[in-house]
Length: 144
Image 1 (cartoon, rainbow, N blue to C red):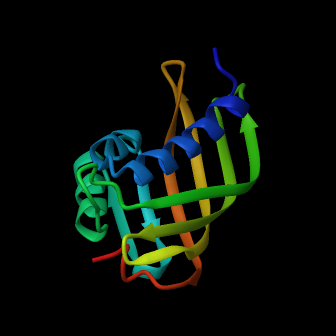
Image 2: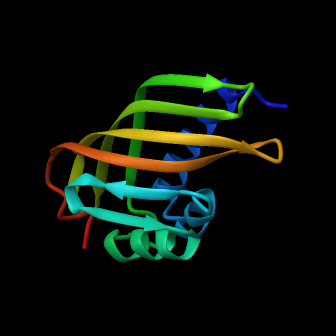
Image 3: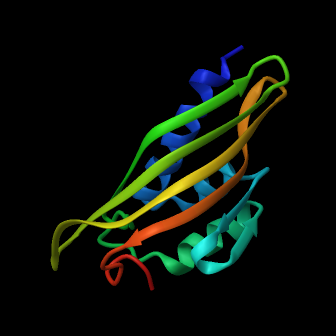
């Protein structure tokens, strides 16, 4: 059985990878048993279809790949894992960089994630993500 100390950072990295790839269906599946709240939007979404639809509706995509041309960089993980009970939480920072055909690479967003996790049937999964927005730059090429 994989320890939460390994599984949780992997789940956090997987989120960044899926968003940056524009694979919002897989993102919805990653949060199949979780909810996402965003303070800046007073938003609460849950379930694969609702999460996939929300990210698809507010994110601009580019070229044949359908990727948003972003890089989500997640740092400063403060991880608390109880492998015995199969629960975990993590606080982290996120900085989003974007480059488009019309804009050079630049930071467009900085915030924090407040995540919770559980182990079910031997697998770790998200149970919640709360996104706290700290600083927002030029998001015009990223959001619709």
